[in-house]
Length: 350
Image (cartoon, rainbow, N blue to C red):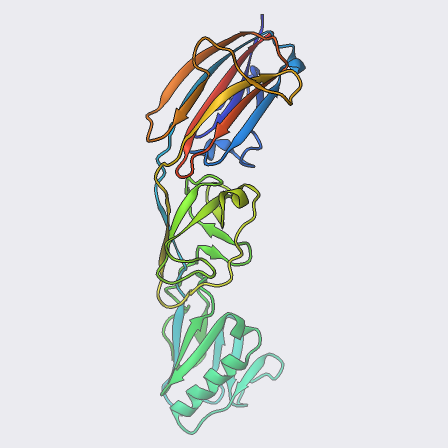
């Protein structure tokens, strides 16, 4: 008889290769909406059902590997705004000087090569302080530039800062030595891990699974998150997550809408730490002929497992023997905190 392999894959596990013709079904393909090889723990209740009549199955055996998962806490930051300075050294020969900030041209006075079509005119003040103020005011008043760069002034110096902690090095140039810049670009910016538009948090190789409870710690709040509060992960992929208020909302992909964060001259670090294992979790096998009324598998060996504390990796082999029912179901009970690893392979004979 030809032996076929169907895999229920929960947790970090090796899948049958792309050319393995024995793999006929991966029952939990939609469990997390993505690549299950990135999953490290199951954190919520779920049920997996297999219709044995589809493939004329005669006998079933299973190999199951389970235990509690150890998932590391992860940190992310709100980024750092970039900065730079423009210094007016003297008013002598200042007229005609071009200062370009992120492709926007500011021109002191009407002296050549002033162009009313492309330049923003800046009045030459009687003192360097006045001229610096006029430049700063023109930057703040510029509709497109002020959305990404803002400025203040002190004496003859214009201080530029990015509006967002986006890691962008906005260019700054000057055409005459009477005006100097701190560097060719605004520097020291760090891209924020927080995306308000999508509610995503960027945490590379985070290892979190959907429904996993995480303790949030943040000295400066990301609105509306509250310091020392438990939230629940929504796994987007290996590098991105969202968070939900409850485990049930996480499973429904009902994320918290992030409203704002600091993103200033001080980079703030936040922590998401998985809670320790708690509650009773585990799994059991059931059978049915109508996909409605299920009863536990009548096995001589144990057909279920319960985890109430940290459990080392355990492997069990079961032989379900002859098939006298149509549906096979695996019920999984997730812990109230922490996560369990569950890797199950079904060997189906026909």
